[in-house]
Image 1 (cartoon, rainbow, N blue to C red):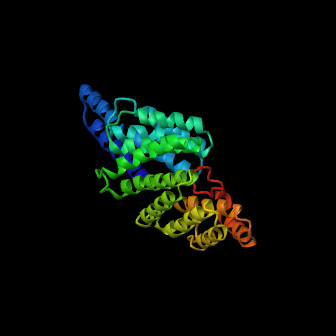
Image 2 (cartoon, rainbow, N blue to C red; image 1 turned 30 degrees about the horizontal axis):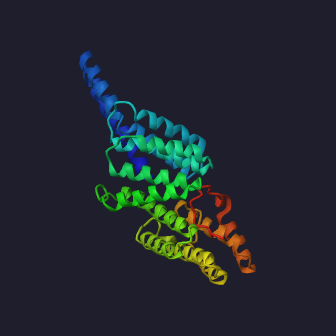
Image 3 (tube, rainbow, N blue to C red; image 1 turned 60 degrees about the horizontal axis):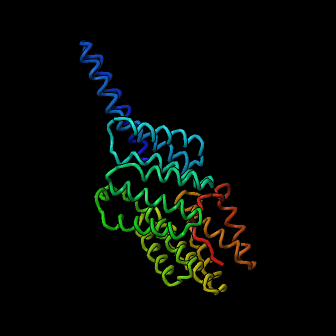
Length: 306
């Protein structure tokens, strides 16, 4: 949201400055050159702001169709020879891949993920995002071996680079990607019967989340829910139920926030599989708290493995 506000402010400042220069200068040739320069320079803010609007509409308001229009415009504007970071040229495609996953269209998600990966950005952050989204799309399609390869590669890229991480907003965004990647790698291990490895990955993800401002409020509940998932996979249903019910009590008061919702929905899905009366009561109460936000559709939550 702060990036969106910043982008709109840059638009306003650029337009005001160039309007003043344009009106103050009376030579037609100079006016033409200033106009071309303004068009080129505005390319640094127009596509990125369109991308931010698209992300805001999709991730916070769930208005996917309007969001797609903004993201498609952003994606194709970045193909023009305008100013702006090459790294950003993959962000529109990544946003479109995430919307496709939200809507359950895994094939389209893969198409846009591949498009993001094909963008020659020369930036580790763009490579990291691209590898992550490709892995998410493969996970959604059930291609766990392929997903694991891309997610481990993204982890390697994330762990070996620090450029740009001094900027808090950027660091938080990339860290959220990494938190999802760790969770999916743990889920893949769980599905493969590698319970000890899954448990260690879930613990690593829990610790990582506890150190992030945007995710620390749900880190405890996340850790309990994932421990419950491991216990369930090992056949300890009683321990699984106790941990998942504890996770419900440790959720923050407002579970409708984007960062809280994914963990809450994962817990809700797990409660549905635990058949006790206490779990049913907790399920109904949590579903009521989530309201219309009960259907995230991202398919990236930690669920019980039978």
